[in-house]
Every structure is written in structure tokens, then in C-alpha cells.
Length: 197
Image (tube, rainbow, N blue to C red; front, top):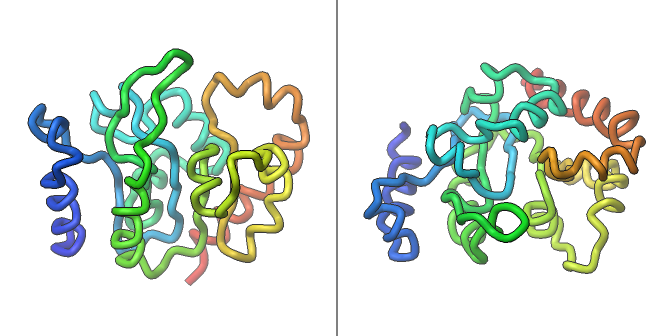
């Protein structure tokens, strides 16, 4: 790991807000590289990801890779695709799924990491937390509307998505335009970002 990336990694581990995780031997979970062309900003690692130490190592990850049109090898190559969740630690289980990422976490750590990745051409925002944070939206703004209007954000280097969780299967069935129109456009943007010199 590059010394600048390593310094940030160690600072995250040493931060008092993460002391409980560090005491339990749990390191922050994300993947970054100076050559990354794409950044995928998700929610937070799930329980399986935390246990296996592999981001997006579940059904949601399988679906996301399919949406992006990339192989597992490409997805996990930090010099091509950086994986940067809104919180680098599993937040725990809630009543209807995982708890949300901690407030302020991304604001604290993302800028320094992103500054070390000057080759990024596309930032894929996965789920409401990432979309609202990076597109500066209000909680009242409709995620469906934003995702449907993805073309309005491509010029700024962003591509907003719903979360690929199986829990969103009903949403996908109610919004057939997503698979028919949005996903082909996403694949094209991802391919262009990876091929661009």
C-alpha cells in the first residue's frame, strides 16, 4: 500500500470513533489505488464483507458487478476500481436491514482518499446515502427520480444508482426503465472510464 494511503488507513484505525472496532481487531474495509478510473461509493460493509474482509462479497455485490458489466477481477483491482463506502465498518443490524452508515464519516475520510486518486473518471453512487451526500440532495428528494435522471449527472462525473440489494427487487419490477435504459448507459460509462487514457 502506498505510504500516503497507509497513513490514512492507520489514522482511521487510530481514530477514537473507531476504537471499538480496532480493539476487536477489525480494520477499516475499503479498497483504493492511485490508478483507479472508477470509484464505487456504497453504503457500508455488510456482515459477510466484514467477516471475509472482502467488500461487496454478497448477493448485492454480484448484482452490482453485473450492473457495471465488469468481472470480479476488474472490480477488485484497486488500480482500476476503488471501493469506498460511506462508512468503512459494518454498522450492525437494524429492524429492517443493516443500520445506516455513521454520519460525518465520509465527510471526514473521503476527501483525503479521493485526493490521492487523480485518474478517476466516473463515480458510481450506490444507494440513497451516497447519492444524497455527493449530489447534495435533501432527504425529501426522490431517489427514483434522481436515478431516472442519471444523464443530468454524468457531466459532473457521477452515476446515481439504487442499492443492488435483493430487497430492491420489487422496486426494479415497478421501474422497468432501469434495466432497459439505465443499466446499458451505466455499462457504457463504466467501459469508457476504464478504457480512457
